Amino acid sequence: MIFSVGVDTIEPERIKKTIAVYGDRFISRIFHADEIAYCKSSAKPAEHFAARFAAKEAFSKALGTGIRGGFRWREVVIRRHFTGKPYLVLEGSMVQLAQTIIGNNYQMHLSLSHSKTNAEAIVVIETVPA
Image 1 (cartoon, one colour):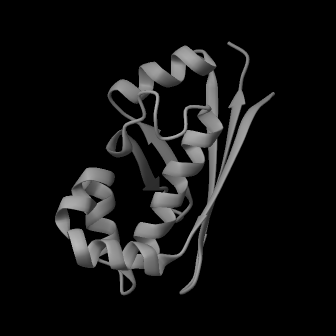
Image 2 (cartoon, rainbow, N blue to C red):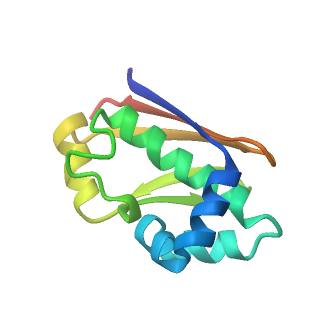
């Protein structure tokens, strides 16, 4: 059963400008070390950072907290399956927050898209039988 859906869109140029102003201070506040390594290894890091930023925002909307209410940016991690498919992993206090709001049995689904002008993410949270 679908628990909730969250969607977010951001312009990679906004992320690029924020990185130019705040540098690693911004990056390390928002992104997990694995995400940073992946994005920086890309030919177009701003697009990849923007897509992951959008995914975190979309997750916060699907969870229902927004970026307040105990939301921890670096504890929502976007990883890649060996096939390239992105997926969400929760760490630290975000695990407990999600269990409190959703329950113990859930799955998260993530889709990302990005180009020079837009980065988008959709998150679907599904409750599953125990």
